[in-house]
Image (tube, rainbow, N blue to C red; front, side):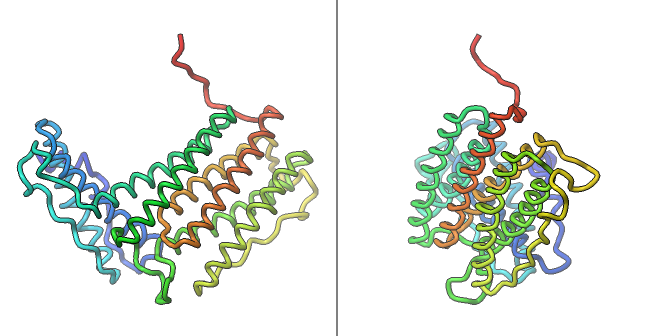
Length: 337
C-alpha cells in the first residue's frame, strides 16, 4: 500500500535512467540542483512532520520524505558518483529529535534556514519575471511586477552574500581547474544563453526580411542591434575568458531577400510581433533561472543587465502592439458582480 502511494507522489523517480555516456555541464548541473533541492525537501518535510499532530498530514509527509529518500536521492547520487563527482553529505534526520507534534524540539539549523530561503527566493525571482512578461494589457501592472522583481533581486543578492560568506550553500563543482572558475551551473546557463541569442538573431533577421512595415522593422532592428548582438558579444567574451571555444555565429539573413519576402511562406506582422514577444518572455524566464543559480558576482551582474534590457525591449514591443491593435490578449476576468 505504501509503495503505491509513493509511486503516485513521485512518479518521476521511476523514469531516471543510469547515464550510458559522459554527461554535459547542463545535465550535471540539473542533477546537482535536483539533489540539493531534494535534501531541502526532506529537511522541511521532516520538520513539518514533527510540528503537526494531524494524522493525514503525517501520512503524506512521511510518504513524501521516504519516497524521496528511497527512490529519488539514491538514483541522483549514483549518477553523479558514476560521473566522478563527490556528492554532498545528506542532512541528519529530524525524526529523532523529540516526538511528532512537539515542534519546539525540532528546528532547522542556521545553514538549513539559509538554504531553504535561497530556494524560495529563487522561486520568487522566476515568478516575478513571469509576471513582468505576461502583463501586456496594463503598463501599471507591469510596473508593479518590475518593482517586485527589483526588490526580490536585492533580497536574493543579500541572501546570497550572507550564505556564501558562511559557506552555507552547496554550489555545483567548478567547470574548469582555474582559480575562481565558473561552476558547472554558471557555465551551462551562459552556454544556453549563447545558443538562445543565436536563435534570437536568426528569428529577428528573418522577420526583418519578412515585413515592409517600417515601424515594426525599427523595433525588430532595436532588438537585433541593441539587445541580441551586444548580449551575444558579452556572452562570447566571458566564455572565451574561461577557456571555452564558442560556436560560430549564425549566417546573416539580412538583405538575402527583398523586404517582405523570406520565401514562399509569408508571416503576418501580428504573428511576427507575437512570436518576438513570446521569445522575449522566454528570455526573461531563462535569465531569472540563471541569476538564481549564479554565485559569481560578474556573472550575476551580466545576467541582471540582460534582465532589464529585455524588460525595456518587451515594453517597446507591447507599446507597438497596442498602438497597432496587433496584440492577442487572454480573456479579461473580474471578481466583481
